[in-house]
Image (cartoon, rainbow, N blue to C red; front, side):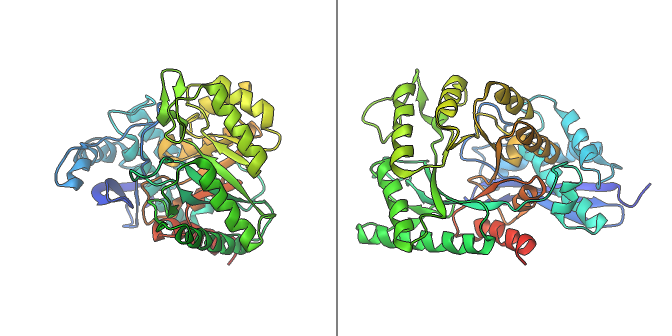
Length: 412
């Protein structure tokens, strides 16, 4: 048996960037080489993505992942014994066969993604190549490009005085710019926004994703903050605004109960609000502007403004190749967001990205709310030729290390 064969798979519980329990998997080959990776997690689980195997109410907190640890020991480790770690496709095929359902309730998306990423890292180590090169072998992505970071600069805040919780106010660099310059501007814009918050009389604390958290009363206030920072720094020509609305979280009985609205809004009223913001602020990106099930509303907005604006599907697709392909036929959106833990494995992340490319959609690879000390995301974005990487804010090491890895590889 080759010394690249997997000899051991183990798991432990650790803390993610939000202090929640997460499973980390270590994969060891017959030569004693090892690699490890930790599952990311979002603030919520979308309708079309895999679930976590966990006991949320467990105490102490790390005991929440005990069910995941048992799955790794009882099912994953025996199944992967002897598999060639350098074959991303073969490792992920075995993981997929353990539970072929979308939800993966018996195995857990947290288990499969952590195991898959760890095995991919080990394969790169075995081959003696950078991780992005190893992943590119399986990506069929064509001529390499340079993904640029899209920064979450302002979060509406989760406190009782905020009317804009969970909405991300994003900074998108115009493509073709130097990576180092983009990162420098992102850092400066964040600092400027914080100073504007102080001038307005509130703190401007750090959010969970490295943005500036502000107790906003309206979406317009957040957009005004970000626009003022760009103008004040003289960089408005090279950087544009975007929004992640997470509309599925507020979809109730045929209307959207956004806290910033005085009353529930119909889909038509929501679309009208987006059109106004696009006209007033020059938005170039609107993510999850409607609930994931409301595909006709996505398609209508894409048909109307998709020539100028990236209408992005995150919960809409849940990084699922079949949904991306279906959405391409109906033109639900013109931009696809891919997240490894939504896809469930590295191979499924690669095939989701491939489906987006086949549909001529813009491709965004994205972090999650619960991140860790890993830059796998950046390697994936490089491998699949993503246009952008949503890294969170240019602050907190769990976010900045993704940016640093882009610089190491693409602007050494």
